[in-house]
Image (cartoon, rainbow, N blue to C red):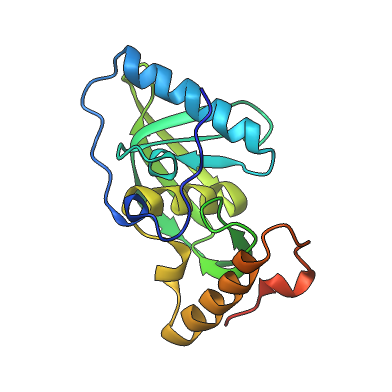
Length: 176
């Protein structure tokens, strides 16, 4: 089953997700549905459960090598800095240059119940940080200074007013 993506303004996106305590058939089905939703969109690389209205600490991702899932993830180490245009399925059409750690070590639980640790850098590291933010009820706007947030919200409102219009390059905000 494919879900509709919750977008900015939906209160579920501002709520912290709860840990997954029991990996049962419902959780496995939810993960399958999350992948189906992600693939149906055609423009995303990852999806957190709150983005489909489910307040559980789960996210899925696929960078083209193999689909992966993690439950109850946390960043346990980070280092470096990397500036990159970041987008979000829940804030469609807006890409903002954001600074985040370049390398991370993420720890969580796989669907088999075993602890997993993944060292990642650049895009995958950013993906982990972005999706864990969703699990904590944090959006890209929350990571900006007040002036950056004001400019980004104004740009997002203009995108939202014309959702079928092509997104020109100027939609990629440089907010340093």
